[in-house]
Length: 109
Image 1: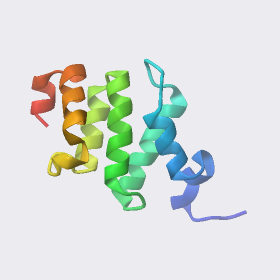
Image 2: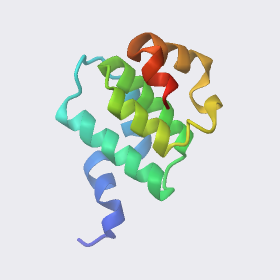
Image 3: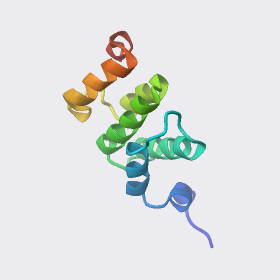
Image 4: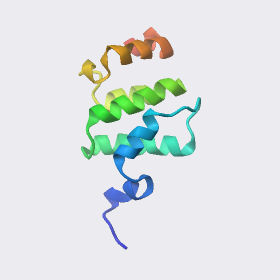
C-alpha cells in the first residue's frame, strides 16, 4: 500500500486527536519513547498547518510541565506562537509554567 509521506506519522500514531489526548493526559514523570515521538509528530503537524497550533501548544505544554522539560515547553510555545498569543496557554498555563519551570525561564520566552 502506498500513501503520501506526509501521512507516515498518522499511520504510526493514529488520528492526531488521539495523540493530543495521550500527550496531555500523561502521568509519567519522564516521557516514554512513544510519548516523545508523539510530541515530535504533533509539533511537525503544527508546523505544516495540518493541526491547529493552539491545540498542540496546550497538550504539549501540559505534558512538558509534567515532565519538567523546559526545552520541549519552549519549542511548543515557539512553534505554536504562544509567545505572541498568550491566550493560547491561558493564565493558568502560564502560572503552572512559572511554578514548574521557574519565572526566569518562562520570562525569556
